Image 1 (spheres, protein in one colour):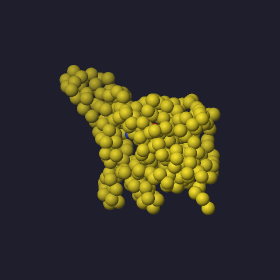
Image 2 (cartoon, rainbow, N blue to C red):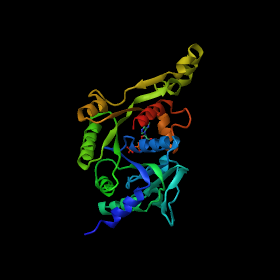
Image 3 (cartoon, rainbow, N blue to C red):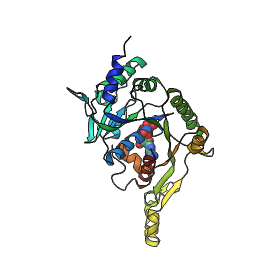
Image 4 (tube, helix red, strand yellow):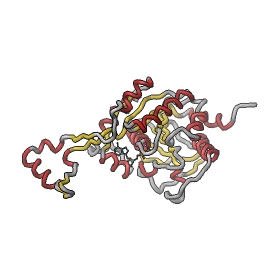
Amino acid sequence: KGPDPDLVGIAERMSTVKHKILILSGKGGVGKSTFSAQLSFALAGMDHQVGLMDIDICGPSMPKMLGLEGHEIHQSNLGWSPVYVEDNLGVMSIGFMLPNPDDAVVWRGPRKNALIKQFLKDVYWGEIDYLVVDAPPGTSDEHISIVQYLQETGIDGAIIVTTPQEVSLIDVRKEVSFCKKVGVPVLGVVENMSGLSQPLKDVKFMSSSIDVTEAVIALIRKNSPELLDVVVCSDVFDSSGGGAERMCREMGVPFLGKVPLDPQLCKAAEQGKSCFEDNKCSVSAAALKSIIQKV
Ligand code: ADP
């Protein structure tokens, strides 16, 4: 039996992609897609050629998180063309193929696998430095497929996104174990939503359910205006067990850092924007930048 022609086709397509990075999470809602989107914006901002592939087939968020809702995929003689946010940042998602973004994709494993195979084989990325693959949460058909289909060319590594609580970390251990079993190096773990951080001027002050923000801010502005730029931090989730950092030590995988819950980052993600563009997401953007430099 000769080599699988699909795998040969994929290897050929991937020969113009320098690095492939898989973004994983144990649970949904921990910020995996937000991280994938902002990582892609950051790499593109460093003048790399970047492709972002969303294989979260049942819950594709990339069109919204990159401000590309309503766009469609076009076909050329080279293959399917990604949708471009910038000249050096292309995106491929099943979200571009759905006539209505509210439509549910109710597919069984084989159909999902076929689409992932087609994404890998038929999308024309051209010469790119990074392909960031946003996977669905957990370890299911899609994960096994992407690893299997990329076995010829290899995956550089996986970044696992989690929140600090133990319930989330239990699932991260499974992700690490999955990576070890299939031979994908773990580049590291990111602890997202690690406390809430925002400048004092953005905090809301309540007294007996009455919003007294204006009065408090006026008082601070009058007496100590420099305090308005102080960053207020508070713990949200319980990380008394040592959080992701301790888990990484125990499992022998790199800990990449913490990103706080930042209302401005949420806003940037909702608007499909880069958090590095202006100074609005100052706290989370700095944390993300230092993490990305370690990858
Ligand atoms: P996942 O891909 O893990 O399901 P998402 O990236 O879709 O999670 O994030 C879930 C929600 O949380 C989104 O609305 C996103 O904007 C928001 N979010 C993620 N990380 C942060 C953060 N650090 N600060 C504020 N909001 C965040």
